[in-house]
Length: 366
Image (cartoon, rainbow, N blue to C red):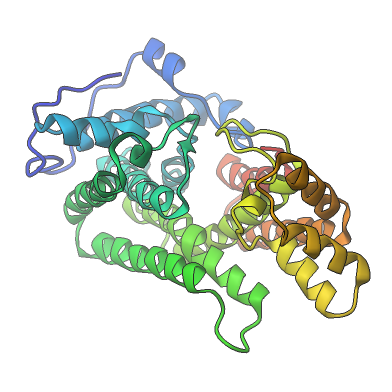
């Protein structure tokens, strides 16, 4: 699916949300698939086609929103959109909208907003992390340099802001508060815990800000713009916060137990980069409490991991230590808490799909 680059950025997204013709079955089948954990959607004769059709429309809106008359800005903005991705956040917006009237055109616009906001943060994250690959392709800063990558992230967030401004003041406030938390989460991760602050609690708060906040906003916006009962909003926010933390905690464990992921990230990448993941934090705590085996693991983790053999030894030792299983248990606890938050929702495929997604984020291997 392609778009024309002859849109000025100052015009992108202007105008009230309008209904669009349904994409063809071929374009849907060729370009989109539902992520693991959403089998209940795919198996539902009504909701499955509705979600898939809406996702195709969101994909079209993303490409229209980032199209730019400037050739460089157009190329850099399209870079991550065209690399693909699971589109979890807009999918959650669309799914939660089925608690109300999912046909309202504002729902599609809200779904595009959350994905554009997510994409904007990825450009910045990759620069800060010096990540060479994203979704199997070279990162924008590897292709165009850090300055262009950062400005592209800013540009995409500006596009998201244009779209959300058309949805009204409440949506704009939700996006602004969410972006504030995304920034604070990154800041707190960068500077680390304060003197006397528990490193694990600090880390969990970082995950809630960096990941949970936008997932929470995704479900909330779906409920708001579908006209779902107002009492669903808070529980969807709680669900999103908790499932986002569970997702990142599972990523931590996969880094030391999983194989090479589709993103191109290999086991031990976080260890090599010195990222303070939960298994490492728990092992450090155990070592500080006198666990000799944990002290041995930390000695390997803190060593020179530039050599692949040294990295493999550190990964193997950490994976075998009880701290890693404890981290799995923590991820599962957050997923279970996310499911518990859904209790007041009516029984049906929406509730079942949200619960299945919470399970899937901790049952995956990549």
